[in-house]
Length: 425
Image (tube, rainbow, N blue to C red; front, side, top):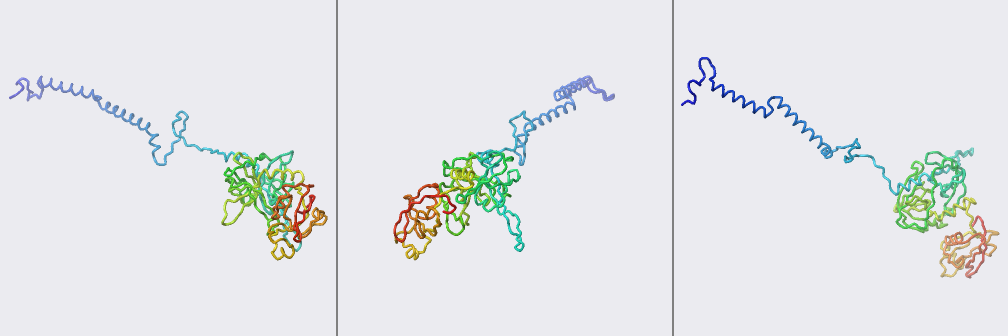
């Protein structure tokens, strides 16, 4: 069965379409055109559609890139614009703490001190040359006129033929010794003030507390480590450290010091111990150095140092009352001599033996004799030479009267002595 009439079929001879076929073909072409129009209509339409997709994708990736880059290993994002404050920026940060602020306040007041002495270089012609005998630290505490005053340790300047001060900028100044005191291990020197920019401020060492932060500034092991800073705490107050001043193996004095665990090494001597506000509260002096000991450094309290500093400025020395005797602790005398020479009571175990009385001294005037054993001064028990010196130097003045009790050949004798200023005890 056929759906076409004979007159609607294609003519097989002339290969032409019948009117029906032409109509169907035209409808099919119109249908394809409408379909292509919906999809862009041509190859150009496809290109524009694809290009739009690429642009949209690129925008999405660009917006996501900052957050993705922060997640990539080793990536660093730097914001070069101030318009977007939410972007991450990596910059160098300057750290400021209470410690750094305190150090900045006083560090340029801490100087280096070089002790220069004459050293023999040729035995035969007795020639000599100036050489560095040691170095330490000092603290500029006052500028007056054209002079700057520096406090340091006695042992830093002891025996110097010449003193040289090294300033923070590396320049050097010749220094003059103003005064020195072996008993407190303090000294004052002076230089020209023209290059001094910073002066340390005295604090109050009496109000320090155990555990309070302190900072040591100085030149450990010489000027190669100039201005080194160490930190610690106040480990103890009112410590007494016995010292052998004349290096004869016997303790001559007991120095009142602050104890700290801030590192203090050779070369730090004379340097600053400051509190967290940058005030000078001590002059670094010594440490106990043994293989089994760590963190035992000592500093002269500034309240102890101030009156010594003032007297050194005024007189060049500390004028102390003296008796005019040489002393030896009773504990250093063998038992045989205690019984046969001194003839002291058996129950007496402590005291100070007078080994020599200086002629025309206050002791001789008062009637003191060799081998007297001093056991009491002004009602205070005297057990050793350190007790005697502390009472004499800390509680008495030149011109004062001293009440003394001594054992002489087994008998207790009382003496009254008027103190004078002398170079011997």
